[in-house]
Structure formats: structure tokens, C-alpha cells
Image (cartoon, rainbow, N blue to C red; front, side, top):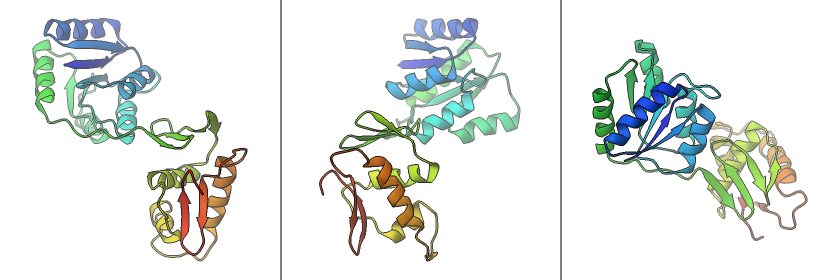
Length: 225
């Protein structure tokens, strides 16, 4: 199996990596949470083993970010924190298994084998693209034609919904429910004002508009008018 070990302690990383390689696995090591995120999101893995306490981005945050971006590789967390609350936090973040340090390598190998036997969960795309507009679902970065676009949290949610429903007309009611979590009409221009600001940021300076108003129906994000 192809296994990524995210561990900042060199001795532990070497111990785990050597044992897994001797067992016939292809092993790579990331030394901190941010490097682990980049490698876990950028390549295919059969299992990712993550230390709970990492510099840059801790193990819980790393798992939560991966799951939020649709990365579903099986995850085993290694930790010195063995309390029930700590284990629950790791599992609730999206980890598949939890092993407390110090551990016997035979137990780690058994847990790795068990995770490897589980059916692979479907992995979603981590980026949305429409024409030259791109959104990274992990970092929440948005670019158009390679140029970064600075969006507020609600604008990000609105653009994500439009991109996920590209080439489809979405109504004002749909946007209120899915972006604002409102199941009633507040009789304000909140949708219209956010669409206007979003359009000014996404389409400004571009030769082709992507966000279109469909008169009497709603809005549509598409490459062609």
C-alpha cells in the first residue's frame, strides 16, 4: 500500500516508516501539518498516518481540512493524548482509527492492514473550475485567469454554490436556503447586493462575464452569455 506518514518527530517517523517499508509498503514522510496537507491532498494514498501534535497545522485540524475538502483517504491518528475526549475529538474530526503512543509496531501494522481492507470511500474533487475561474475547496482560495480574488466568507459560499451548479439557473429562494440557511423570504435585497459585489470581483477586468442574471428566474454562472 502507498502510505503517507505525517510526523514531526524524526525518531518516530523513521521507526514507523522503516517498519512499514519492511512490511512491503511504499512510504513517504511529511514533517509538519502544512506539508502533510499538501501531500495528502495532492496525491493518491491508501492510508494516511497523522501525528496528533504537529507544528503549523495540528493533526485534528489537518484531518478536518482534508475531510472538508472531500479527501477521503483512510486516516489513522497517532497521539500521546489517550483520554476519551481526545479520542472522540479525533474520530469526530474524520479519523478512521486512533492509536496511543507508545505503541507496539505489531499493533500499528494490524491497524494499517485493517484500514487497508476497508472499501475505499469516494473522493470528491478538491477544486471547482468554470472557464478560467477556479476555487480551491481546501484553502478557499479563488483565482480567475491566475489572479487571486479576495472574497468574504458569505461571498465564498455564494460563489461555491453557483460554481457547483454551473450552467444551471438558481433562484433567489434556492440561494436564501443554501447560502444563508433561510427558509423564508426576509424581503430584503441581501441576495441581489451580494450577487452585485460578487460579480464586480469575479467579472471585473475580464473580457467575458461569468455571472448572469436570468430575468424573472434567478442567476446562472456560465462561460457563455
